[in-house]
Image 1 (tube, rainbow, N blue to C red):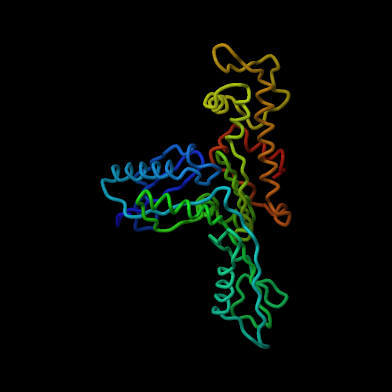
Image 2 (cartoon, one colour):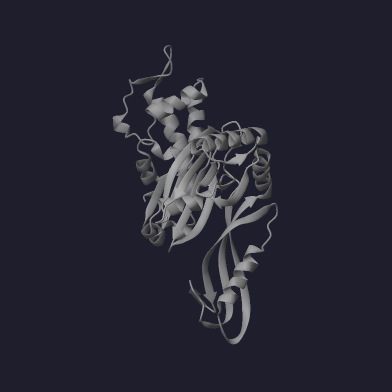
Length: 338
């Protein structure tokens, strides 16, 4: 990262994206360059599985950015996500002498104790404070309140240590220094969601190529984060079972697929061309697309905890490549009634 540039790289299942920007005096960012590399041969469900090919992609991205910027890049920020990530709740409690007033130091001790939690084969990538229980009352800010028992409720975001090691190895082998790793779903939420949506309760669903990430917010706090190993590529693969090449199946999906089609609008005589010699009945194509899409929506909705399912006054916010499908909002509304 040259002094005047901020450079970030995000590793997705369909592409690795590098972006360089310049921070303005008002805090906003001016984007100077965006480059992409196909990652389908090296990243699966958001997790690196081919280190050598990932190294090559990263090297290409940095070389292209340096050419566009006409400057060397010293370090980059790295966005991480994918199937490896999940959230778990944790409670840290402390009994206090009578008449103790909660201090900032006490809160920091609880947060440190939470951060020092150990999980088998996993480590804490980030932690979101939910609320504090002061004796029998829940508080967002307990400092200054008198109590005899203080309890911190946290949401820990975990990822597999093996993923962390592989990711670091890729950047080391590419000779790229990492300034900091950040959780891509949290950065996405900060840019996509409004304060009103986070406050009133919402679900951000990032419909990617091989994974779908669900982030639930309520009262401005991240309440749940889950990643399911299903994405828009699953629809493409289902279409490919019609004995067509996957690239042709992807083209058909982009051209003809709709997340929802009213049964009264289906023309049973209509066929869709696969190639010059073959075609498929429109109804069969619709059934394939809608069948898989309903499974993805059902699994995404299942990830939303029951305690927040009826509190999503801010609604469901869709993003990611899969969210571009025609009538995708209608399909989600039909299933979730949100």
